[in-house]
Image 1 (cartoon, rainbow, N blue to C red):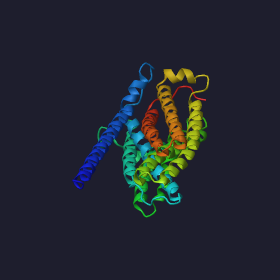
Image 2 (spheres, rainbow, N blue to C red):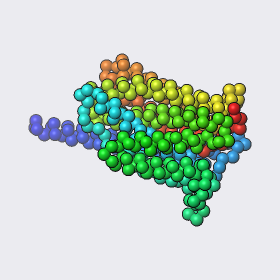
Image 3 (tube, helix red, strand yellow):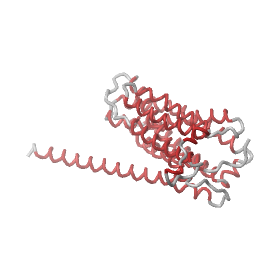
Image 4 (cartoon, rainbow, N blue to C red):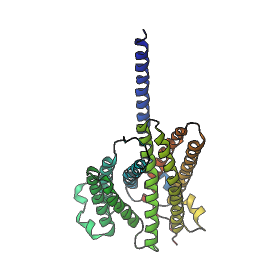
Length: 336
């Protein structure tokens, strides 16, 4: 009898663990599906009553851009957290399986889709015959789109190599291309705008990607003391990254919506509405991050900070989707 009961309890516990894991996986897939609806239905919702018109296929373009942003976050966060983990004395050597190759594949497909849109004059291609691949080389946006496609291809090859850290070079190229694309030459002082966007994207990618990989690493370390150290080191860096995201975001918004028109445009333009939604979400993320940091410093079990941190990752995923939506909406009329 004494041999049978523990086995039964272990089997029951194992079954509950599998059911809980399945429930978490289903919930995660559900959240991803819901988040994916944001860029698809967002343009029509944001444009309602503004008198503005979005480009055809804005929802698809927003979704592709959001996937591209996420494909930057994942490998950047992995490389950063693995570097942090390698500097912790006595840290377990086991690390979660890399998602960098999958991210590079997703980024490549998203960049390829966006390049096809550019090749048809910013219209959704309905057949291969209307895609002018050669025309991509003759325009600024086309050249940047091709650069992103090739950069993700190289990033995937780097992920397969013995030195996956070399991914940072092609990923930096993608961020630079995005920063240049967001600020065409017709804009006032485009170099300043591109510099702000580059810093903004870099800080945001590190913030979101590193938090995701930190939580994945903690699950593999199974409550090891090094997990608390890793989360603490990430929290210190995250505070700086949040400051960078906030400062560059405010400066970029003021460049597109002068201070005396901001409050008006936040509610009367599609871009302003999406930006307001993003600001509210980022404020929510900041509250969750503060909650996690308080738990990390004061709770009897510091790893209870993982609860709000997981919620923070979920909200950051929504922020990425809203960021993709912003790129597909018409820019405000007033410029500095």
